[in-house]
Length: 402
Image (cartoon, rainbow, N blue to C red; front, side):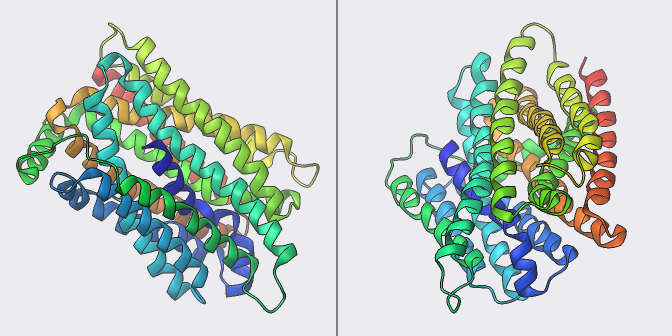
């Protein structure tokens, strides 16, 4: 599950290290790139999660996951074929549709299969696949960009296109392998009825769940924004090449993301024993607070000099904090929903997160950058407001849960 998650997220964020060469060849602005990275993927992805969960109740899970990874890989290759933003957008929409099946089914299986005392670490291991995927996109994408820039003939496809072709092809063997595996869990019954029951249960618990979900949404928005724009921030602030920026940002995001997800799961299991329902929102508040504190050195640290060590250190702190928050967003949801409805509740949760946080984050930063004529100011403004809102929501969820 984590490996499929890693490759899918790698496909999703590969464009972030290719922003500058894509902008140069296709003559795009930050606002157009923000649409491609955010709404073009996330709106379709979010709307498709619930239908994919309904399908997961009837189809063999392994085959559904294989189709999801296959579709993601094909969409990545199609992005490499795009000659304009009008062709990039449909390719990203296909990717959003394909990847919609991965999260709800995987998290539901983990929640059903693992003992409650170990569930936090199980979900954290799965969500850590996303951090590895971001690192794969940044480091692998940047390395391939440098390689193809040196090897590709002047008359052949642009290096950024070759990167998308190569990375899209990586997922094809794994999709074939996953599709051949037997489905380990039977999922009988009426999925539509369970979806209505899950929605009803979440509405009944809205006093605690609404601020809990809002806090997770803010963390998702902030993390998607950082993933989409951090490499460009390093390029513009510190004069790095795209491959070097991708390598540095990718390594930081990979290590910090895995650490944050693992730490979030461990703290949830460790601190949640016998302490009521306030543990996960309390950890979400802590994580968003760390991100907020990191924003000043992230957007202002070492501007114009060196390799941006202060920027990278602040990025690591921000990613650790946001990863702790997102891991506990999923963990806390499982604790408040009965086991029979966790797949459907997770689907609803991910739909809200994707339609709002994932879609808006990169787009808002792109719009703000275009309006403010500065990417650093845009990141500071959007993420600062987001972290403040998320901290307020997490504090409210903490008080209500206790």
